[in-house]
Image 1 (spheres, rainbow, N blue to C red):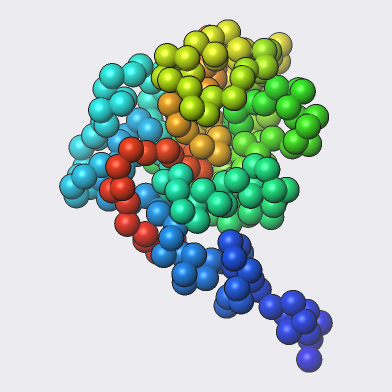
Image 2: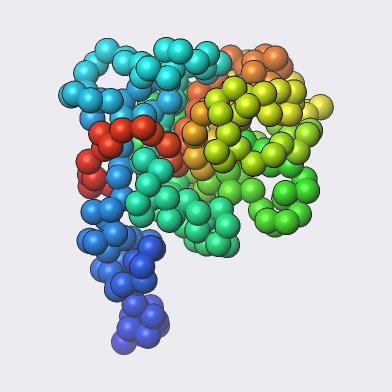
Length: 247
């Protein structure tokens, strides 16, 4: 009996969410899978939120993206920020579950191929240094690095910086969220050499209002990005248009 088989017998694969036994590593059990709302079908081309109706070849834009300026050209998300998906995001963000980045990268690759096909650089949304000291890692950077390992795009964490610590955005109005991010994110001194003329994809764990991603995109355009797109693990949405699908 090989060593790998012995290890599997001693430590069988467990569900990423509930720890139930599963057939393979980095998988969800059937019950958790059914509660993970992967986005499919018709979606907004700018933020990835699900839309009613069937998918079509023509880009569709949701009401929010019609009303709010989005300083990027295309956006995608893996799943709705609810159910098991929300648990996964929070476990990565606050629970030191860094092993979740591996399956998350595969989900990002599948959901994000429209933005990744042209990507030169993957740039994580930055966190403020004081928050980084408290959390010890930036979950957006963990996701971007894992995704870079399975794509041809290059991981560049040193392009953007959060120069001002912003208050928590949870529960804030749209206007306050965007106001909080005003002048809070800028390009670093080396960003111009790295970003100029490049197609970049901004990576984050969750998009809610889009204020943080907008601030990052504007900073990237200022230093000469050729194209700016966004990709997030989850999208906070208003309506339950999502049906779980096999990823």
